[in-house]
Image 1 (tube, protein in one colour):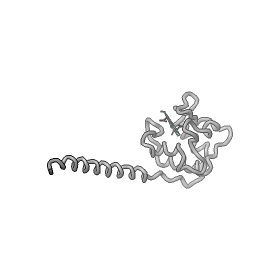
Image 2 (cartoon, protein in one colour; image 1 turned 135 degrees about the vertical axis):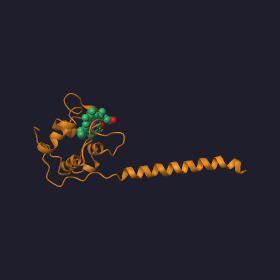
Image 3 (tube, helix red, strand yellow; image 1 turned 120 degrees about the horizontal axis):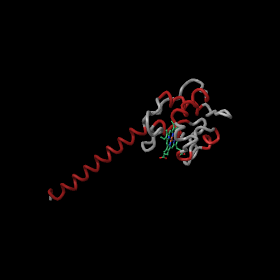
Image 4 (cartoon, helix red, strand yellow; image 1 turned 90 degrees about the vertical axis):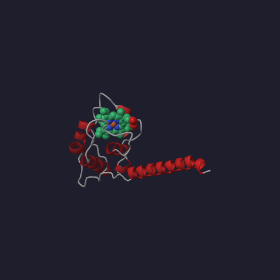
Length: 139
Ligand code: HEC
């Protein structure tokens, strides 16, 4: 009897442990804090454009537009890429671009290679989006 039950009990315990670990990992992920938006007024030409140029144009610019997204031209950037709008003015925490640069999606992190953006850089991007994602014509 007991000999027959043991493997079943063991499998049950292993499954319980796996589920517990899985749930713990999942909740840790969700609570990973997003860097806070910068508190100052953000200027597109001074603060955001150089950041996009240095870290994103290579793959989202004139020569390549990965996933249909260009970040070097106002109208293209506002339209977003194959996955829809990259950012929604006023809603940085829900914006795809912020999710990706902050690494909230374990499968897609932007930029995908090289140094990740710093918390300060993510904070600037968040503040820019929250302050209306102002992108002057001609920039
Ligand atoms: C080395 C190339 C590379 C660089 C640099 C890069 N990306 Fe990407 N990006 C990609 C690729 C490839 C995809 C498609 C990824 C996927 O969907 O799995 C993508 C997709 C995206 C998307 C989703 C577009 C959509 O609509 O599907 C966003 C938003 C994005 N990148 C933002 C950025 C930002 C912001 C930067 C700069 C901080 C950046 N990326 C830098 C290669 C790059």
